[in-house]
Image 1 (tube, rainbow, N blue to C red):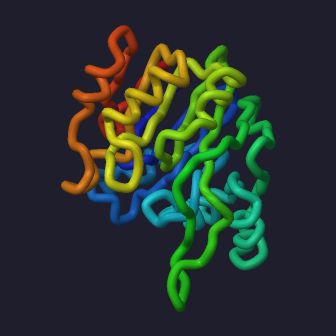
Image 2 (cartoon, rainbow, N blue to C red):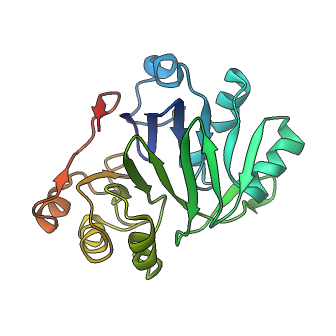
Length: 230
């Protein structure tokens, strides 16, 4: 299983028989090298979207059309794009599980907001979500954008993820200290990978506080376009 950070909250996950692009914001992403775009999306089989905000959904439609692959995510947004953009899609909702090339992907709650830009301002985009992705002997929790929430208690108990990909940049989401608290209180991670940080000066720039708060847990600070084998 291989994970590659695309900057911000974007990841390329190679798992089972799938190559899943999670929240692929490439165009205009200040930490993603534009010349690496073809490499980042090569062979992708699905786009998995946590919510509609442009720093997550930015390249979703372009990639889906270019590669003729489905967008997977909250039913409201995906079905709307199927009708208006002509893309393939797998729309589902919280509690539902879909099979993506042998990887079992369950949508779970997040606490944030979700919209896409419209001619007259933000347009409702069906709500925010996280995912539990099970395959190759691991379960990965992709938090999406969220704060700490009590739902993490049952999510940790029921899904028992061993790998956490956690938003941790602060201001719009949990910061490093809060992410460490959530990971320690609600989960039993062996590995934690922070995201939604370092993109802008407004966000946290290092994971030192996350590492300090999670002794005994492997905290990996990802580097853009450098693969991590899990």
